[in-house]
Image 1 (cartoon, helix red, strand yellow):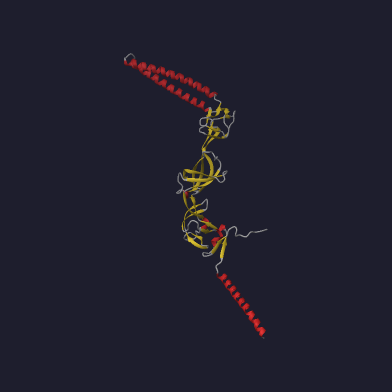
Image 2: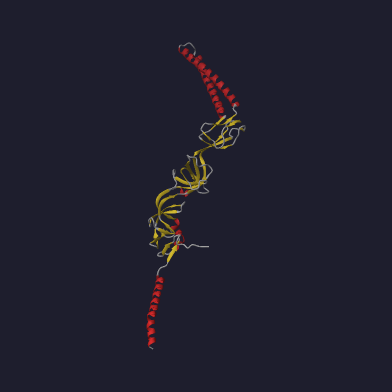
Length: 375
């Protein structure tokens, strides 16, 4: 009997400790059940408010063309004696590009020049006779009828001289037209003829472009007319130049809109001093109607469905809904200006994380937090 009592005495502390352990586990489980859960989100669902530059304005697109372009055409018929330039050659204003056979017009010029010389000599002689008749008339040595005849002869001679001068000018122009010259400094972009070809007046010979300035013709909605002004800056990209931006300005606006599309045609001039750009390339960009430096956030971070715009901000690890005031919207980069409600460095939720309820504890996972999948 005494031995049994001693065994129970030894077992009592162990049983007591077991009871204490069970109670402790029950308390821990209760605390775990009552503690709020922490949601984990990926870094792609969180963005940081930053200060950046924003542009706003309508998008435009079109094909680049040289600001100045001219097609040299034949002004008289004949065979081509020489085509002195080829496609891609740079030319200077006044440089001879094409020579047309001028034998026929040269004969006409020589005849006109001879007739002009004869008329000029005759006019000088008749003018001297008129001066002599006027002196004799003052002394009463000749009759008034002879003076009038001298005056008529002078008028007729001056008319003949004017006619001969006009014929010589026309013949000189035809002779000059036999040499086709560059209208301005530029580059030959197209050659349509070769030496020996027979051309007619108006026939195209060469096309010359001035690559120092390009233009982009595009259309904007009529609703954007109040925002777009002459001189407005334009930024754009060009096919063939990935990752490189170009700039120009609006120089012309069509005074009428297209009745079928409601679009208004505008022209953008683009400096091209280094001749990087070439005609025919496709360009797309936008007209800068507003340009500001401020706090920016992705458009997807702002909820515009309510009475006032709001965002979900992560503050001290907890989600909270904050009303914000927005400014201009950058359509190209899909960002919006935040005027008030948040500060630089705040973290906003985007994507699937926007379904979290305000008050939820959130942890933003990093690459090291994610499990590594092993094959």
